[in-house]
Image (tube, rainbow, N blue to C red; front, side):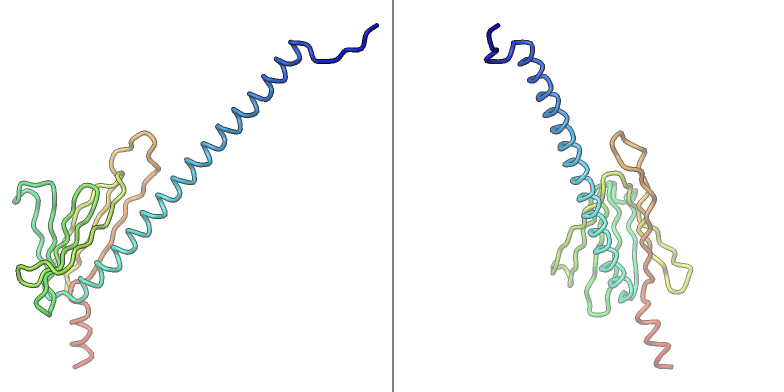
Length: 175
């Protein structure tokens, strides 16, 4: 009997099938890990953006002398504008767009500073103003949009700020 020197065609095909199956499983797993990592990074980025907005919004509202809200029905646009009048003749305008909030600081007619805060696509933003309470409370409501396939489960978010809170506290300390 002669000694065998190589592998048969069947053995080679079986080995290639096993290697291909292994590489496919590894590629699919790596792709899922990449997508999961990207999703977590996006969610964290949005949380940080919303936190940054909340800090700035509350600081502006606490300093404000008055607040005014312009509804989208009156302006025939998709946006709502919230204007805060500050003591040093500045006005801060927050304009809600479907996917972002634009903040503009004006002194007179001149725009001094502009910022944009991104919003997740699965939220529908709107302003709410409660003027009857002293101090007035202004809120940004982020309600979940109807679920879209692939969107994460979403809980409504509310950012509240008291208008003129720093003024009312300084009056109390002076008395």
